[in-house]
Length: 587
Ligand code: ADP
Ligand code: MG
Image 1 (cartoon, helix red, strand yellow):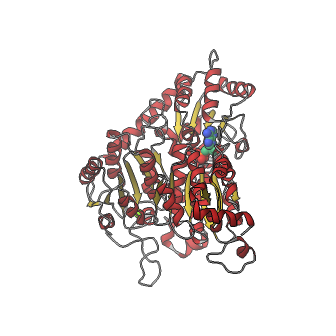
Image 2 (tube, protein in one colour; image 1 turned 90 degrees about the vertical axis):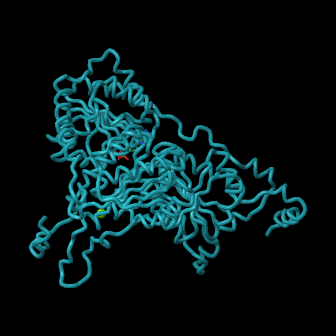
Image 3 (cartoon, protein in one colour; image 1 turned 30 degrees about the horizontal axis):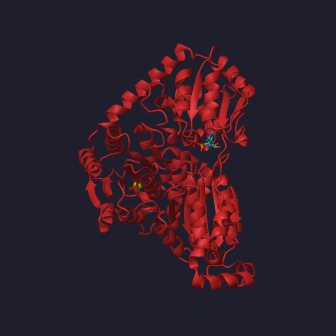
């Protein structure tokens, strides 16, 4: 302790109100920048930080596992355009949170992971401190930026940098390392206040240059079969009116990626979701809006995309480096989705960019045919219940209550729900994102309920739910309006797998048969029930929406109804040797 610190400690005995500390400066810095909610798991050295934050009227949501607190923070970032904040303990807690931080960065969602860490001088000499780990070095590859705070007087600047790094340009995850001792440092309260920084214009709006817009218009003028693809970057931008104007003024069919569903309603006459294969294959000009041409779009190549070289792309993205990542981009528009959409829409005035009628009719006919086929499948009364019948019920429930936020994860449960259940409002569908991560559901549901106050409906495969199921206690503790429907087919992909060897162990992909997930919710005071028919499912969802209480509906689904890996079975590696060895592998 230096001379000055000794003086301050003396003052603490007589006039503590003239002092502040690292704990309170951190809380003040977050609040000054409009961050009012923190998602955390208490423990050394951040237990008191959570208590003090709550004492200062922040909302502190404590989870049972850091991964889910982190997922919640990242989803809060997606929903609010402000970084979601997650606080974790050192080493193992930090590592649990790191998965969520990496996921946030991959999805381009702003998040700040604040983690306590052990003392620098011991860590750096590898002397074996409590939960020793060089967390700053570990975090760096998994986020946009990583900072360590050594002195309390730097908290203001560090928080400002973290916020700006998370939300400016392409949003992403930021790591803030806080060695425990820093929190206890004291300083003069007035000086402390002066050291805080309010970030001015954290994500300065970026617009495309006029020549870039003119280039895009040239592409559209020669297009015969134009298409717009909307991605979650467009949803994130919250420029919903500008996106709608672009779609409606152009008159082009549009295809929403899963989390862009609802940006315009899925029931919009220009929505081409039900003609997805056709429009991807046959379009000759595609406007990508905040959507990467990554694995989710077969990298813009292959059968799905029709003739190689048969398309020209206009890409709207805030990240210049995204251009040409997989295919040539004829007209890059670098900037925020709303700014680019506005510029492009304005430049359409007086230009001959209207889509040929024949193309629109072809798309509409295909979509209507596919929707009619699907409608009959959704009304079946098969026993046991299949995915389609259960999702038909969910579809109606969301149509009747379009303000509900839909959370969705699983394999078949994800793929089928995405294509069957319409979303009617922007940012009302949250799912597994770019990585296809399993276990995001409860964190996402909690964040959606906390950030929006709306009813949440989480449609979960039984396997996906297993990664995060303990957080039903968190849902009950905060009494959140979350209704979870577990599609229980007794296993991963299917519930009827068999052991291919001679042993007695269950197959690697099956769970306990007819498990009662609903009792987990009851254990913590929520409502739970098991349903086996579409009608029972419907009544149970209505009751949950009516009560707004934590509810888990265990929906028994035919164990034989699912497909291996849902729609992405083709991504499983295969070998001719293995196929020769196991006849069962042929499917
Ligand atoms: P999806 O999975 O829905 O196709 P992606 O996550 O692949 O969406 O793509 C989102 C893209 O949006 C990223 O390339 C990201 O850089 C971009 N992006 C993020 N925020 C914005 C924004 N405000 N405006 C424009 N583009 C954005
Ligand atoms: Mg399952």
